[in-house]
Image (tube, rainbow, N blue to C red):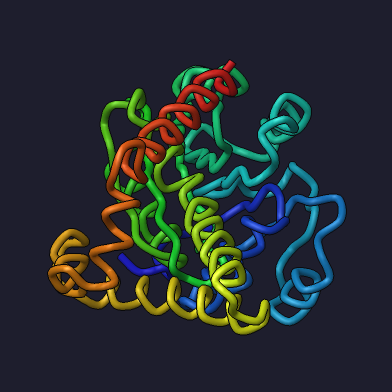
Length: 272
C-alpha cells in the first residue's frame, strides 16, 4: 500500500503536529483532493497548502464519510471537539488519535459501539520527517486500516506497533517526551562550555552541532549506542574522564530512569 491507496482522510486539527503530518502526506504523494480539514483557524502555512492543493476546509458533515479521521487537537480539547466529529465519520471510518493521554476506552466512548480506533504517540521530530510514532489499535480495526494508519505515519518518520496499551505510558515517556531530554542536553552542554571559558555563541554552536551530528551518526550506523560510545572513548582520555562523572552515582542513567518514570506517571494521570 502507498499513500495514494489510503483513501480519504479527515484531519481534525491542523496545528503544529497536524500540520506537520499534512505536509508529510502531501510530499509523500497523497492527493489534496483526498484530504479534508476540520479546524476553525488553520495557521497561515496550512492555509497556503489548502489553497495550493485544493483541500476542503470545514465541510458540511452530510457528505461522504472519510476512510480515516485523524484527531490532532490538544488533549484538553478532546471533550469539546470529539462529540462534534461524530457526524463527520462513518461506522467504517478508523479514528486515529495522536493525543497524549486519552486511552482507547476513552476515545471509544465518544463514538458508536464497534468504531475502529487507533491510539498513536508521535513526537515532535515528525515536523522534519524524522519522527517516531507508536500505535495501538482496538479490536475493531481491520488489517487494512492498520496499514492505512501505518502509511500515514510513515510519511513523517518511523512507526512501531504494540498490542498492550499499558505500554503507551512508557512510550510517551521515552519517545514522546524524549526530544525535550535531548534539547536539554544541548542546553546544559552549552552552559557548561561557557563555564569552561568558551564564548556563549561558540559554546552554543559546539553543543548544537555535536548533538545533531551524534544523532545523525547514530541514525546512519548499524552499531548500538553503547558500542558507538565505547568507540569514541580512549582509555584514560578526556572522554573517559567525563563519562566517569556522567556514569557515576548518581549519574545520567539514574536521572533518566527517574525522569522516564515521572513522565510515565504523568501520562497515566492524563489518561483520566
